[in-house]
Length: 30
Image (cartoon, rainbow, N blue to C red; front, side, top):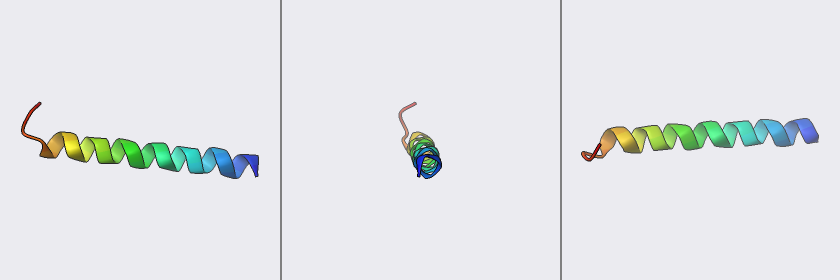
């Protein structure tokens, strides 16, 4: 259970980083 919680948190963080990266690249303001 605890391991699963940590793993899901890692996945969420990775997803968030990917989304932020994409938004940063798409937006014309840098």
